[in-house]
Length: 369
Image 1 (cartoon, helix red, strand yellow):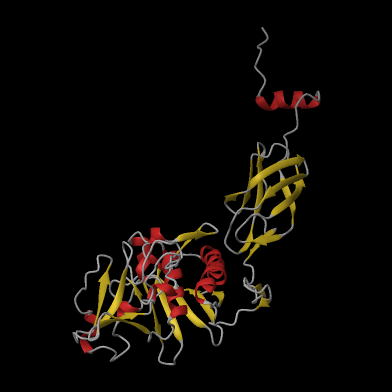
Image 2 (tube, helix red, strand yellow; image 1 turned 180 degrees about the horizontal axis):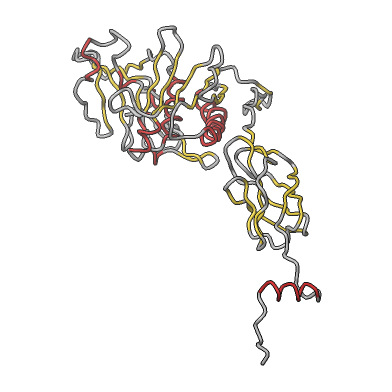
């Protein structure tokens, strides 16, 4: 008796192949070029991805981040929009049901250079003017923020200076961003973005170096830890540096023939709460006072603007969350703070050496507490 044995899998495959019935395995996709081959770190660059076997693409990635607006035009071409990514070369890969293309270095993210000062229209005359103020270099020296997170904030602050601050105070500055491994440009005023405060209770402050150069510091990690917005702190210290760069200006409010208070010349303390600010390109910036806030000669307050967001209605008014440093001329007790409830607090602990004696004194004059 003959014994019938079932054919092996190899025998079945060979038989089907011989009869032309076995479909060939479909190859994985390939990516051969990306045009353009570079784009801004903020994303948004429209690209054409060329390759083979691209039909049925289920995923297009730049590094590990998915692209948007993916359109498969054919087996050899895909249109897509590059996502945001840190600077440097990345691999652009396509995934289909037959696999994922090989890694490559076909696309490079670049940080756009900071534009040089450009003429801006004068609102009053229509003439063109250039920024005549200082150059302020904002340097990332923290571990909690990437350069790509800070550069759009610097751009928003440039708008705040040119559009809003200049309308109020008549001055502006040229902002530049500096990475941690770059040097501060010669003659620039630096603002350093750091992790943790070196002064108790301060989210940021500005001061004058022994060389005579104004500088600022903000503490992004502390901001994030305690629920504050670091972009508001950066805006706050930038504007206060613009108003009183050498930390030596005051305004005297004479309340009688024999009494009065010296008010620190601060731009943002009176309206410093995060929620009192406003957004520029989706980035929260600080509210600030206008010159009328320091003008005690105003008796008819109607029609005057006291702060950018119109929270305040009279000179020296403090909005909820605000404060101001004052020097009590007749009491001899040095610098202290008045809060929004108009309560005069105790003498500033930093005044233990006497008002104005050294650079560690009057810390409330230049800090965002």
